[in-house]
Image (cartoon, rainbow, N blue to C red):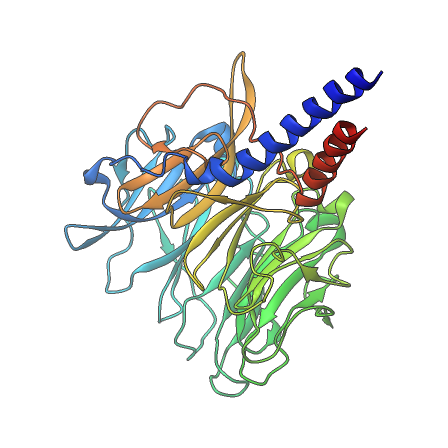
Length: 403
């Protein structure tokens, strides 16, 4: 019996040591090199169709040879065509798709500085400049689009009264007419995935010494309630990113990011808690950004990028309870799904580096150039093992040896 206990304890001890070594050294010895990709693509930002799994459509905005360009790909980034957009001195700072893009081909272009807004209903082949709300808030417009006609538009990042026309506007006719829905500068706006039934949206007002934090509406923006219990809010704590869980109707989960960290609510915004304790336990300024897996209800995967105290990236496979640092310096992320006959559907992660546009099929552990054929299917990243569980396993092994 003693020999059996010894053998069992030795096996558990070896397993625990392997887990510790894997967690400690897998990142350190991972391939941290990134591929050098097609220089003709230039540099800039990618915008992913919300129906990418169907239409394989991407837009790229950026600069090539000191010229602003807008390009479209309908084959997942293997090839690109230049998109003709309205001429003028303004530069597109954001593209916003209708969630039903594969059917209605509608997207909006927001320009910096002037409040200008354009609309396309043919996938970017032609554009119409809309009569956007009049504003003197010299900032980039931000949008949340429910369908081809229903959209919210936010302007302004100054103090209340500092600019005329700043606030949140609503349109039910594709931007032809607008209604005020919130007065004051807006830094973020997001709609519930179930907006047609629950009429729920969240915003982040911005102004030094103003309320800040997050506000929530359950009647399409007609009335608002503070949603900031647990948030660091006020002039330096304003939220600049709000993301609803894809399965919000069931899990009631919402995420947000501010200068001071990532937060998570599992009760539709009634209460918030830090979601990045393992990354920044001191909760100093970190300026994070968050990407949520399109299959969050199944895989609970999140990705975080942050700037301070030093730039980095990490992945969580348990909704933010634990995190694993990733080795590559990819500066921007977004995620979608791809499906293929015989291999089912999987998550594809997009990123940008100095070497070009990238994609990953293993949760960000390795990357390939966007223009290359998709990598063969691989298993999802292994779940992070919480440190207490690892030490409990190690303790069991030692106890077995002692017995």
